[in-house]
Image (cartoon, rainbow over all chains, first blue to last red; front, side):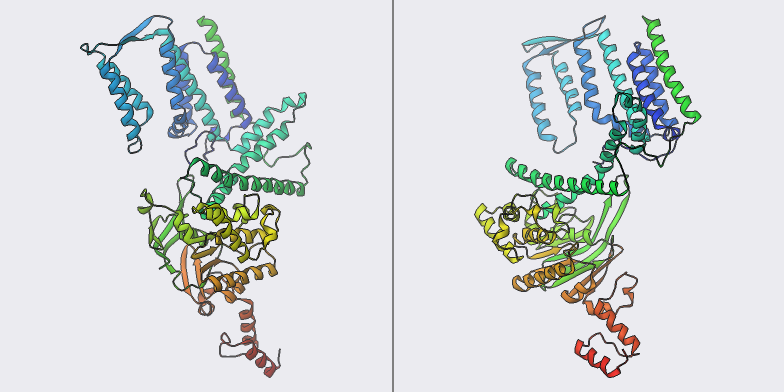
Length: 322
Length: 288
């Protein structure tokens, strides 16, 4: 639970923290739009530079954002490799002949076997394993004394490479921006901002306040429920449940022994919460005042202006480029 | 030798990487005398953390816990052969809120869950469950009822039976009487006493009620600011001047005695005197 960075608020103090949550949400959407409009790779690199420059200015540690990117590393590399391998448009850049012969195939299998065995003992990621695998296939394909039974070419095309880079950069920008938003905004503020931003939906009879309320309560109860789950696990462990071990049949019973009390406690909690809210005269749908009012500051206008400018710039650049 | 704690400390790591020292350097032995032991201390003094070390729910950050000859410390728990289930059979821990453990459709099924986890066959487990339910004073009429439709006190008894059915040598009770009315509290504590006398199990109970301690416990452990500050008889504890600094109170009967002693300006301590002696004393003085 400790490693989850996406969606976690980390206390701090900088202009990003003081920004109005409404502005942050709108700016996020605008900047997302801009990254999708950009069609030139160098503009995209510039955009990434801009986003990364935002981190030290906003006093957000690069390490934290990188931790947020980590769970997506596999997805990022996968889309990158996929684009390179299967996009065959444009100029041919590199062509590497790959020959599968008996030596490298056997080596690959041996490596796979040893990886399965060794991964328990040493930390060895699947990605570095794939890299070594690729190098072995490539290295031994030059041996001509063995008859290759399959010859294929690893070809990299220009469009493939740029497209792959494009998608990679776009994903990095989007994830970084979202991480910056959640790191610098309290869930409650984010929720309030969302409520205000969605307010126009009231015209089409969507009760935005209630939606925001539901999200707010859900966010508030995540740590409480985690705490409860931990207590239940301790209580059941005292009754001889070993959550780490057991056959599949035991596992099912173990999970039921965890879920049933969890459900009952959640219902009790919500019942109590409803009573507490009623005792404080909460009436659904009635207009409410807020403890913390959102105030619009000059910096908010500035950030909003920059966001709009970046969308306009990206549109202009796209028109000029085509 | 039942449970021995040797220089046990435990600290919790919080989300931002800071530490919270819950218990510090605890040396303790219990379980040889087959006694009723009370564990008291203010909220946050580390009582619950301490008892969770008794059945290996927590592993000490430093130091060693020894349960029935099985050593538990940072090194031993890493071994593949280390099994926690036997420890939990020896030391049964009943948590404060029965809601955290009841989950089956019927009371009987729920109570037999523990024995089944220990590897007993279905019919053996049921037999143990029935025995345990009778022990806590719930008869056949309860067996097929849903545990969720019982009253608070009955739920508590079912959760205790759930641990008793595992036939532990040492029974730990985390605030067993909380949330019960005075009559229910007394009934439950009397039940523990009778189980203790019958089965000769060592019992450790966490409580805030000094009257309960005075009435039922032969030995008392006091936790204060993560340290074990007192381990001895309640009678000696009540004469200690530190009582106030540990935020502990005297039981009602002793409060009355000190009050009488003060009003009558008596020199000698009344602590050991019986109720009859007190009554004669009051009558003689005739001033109250």
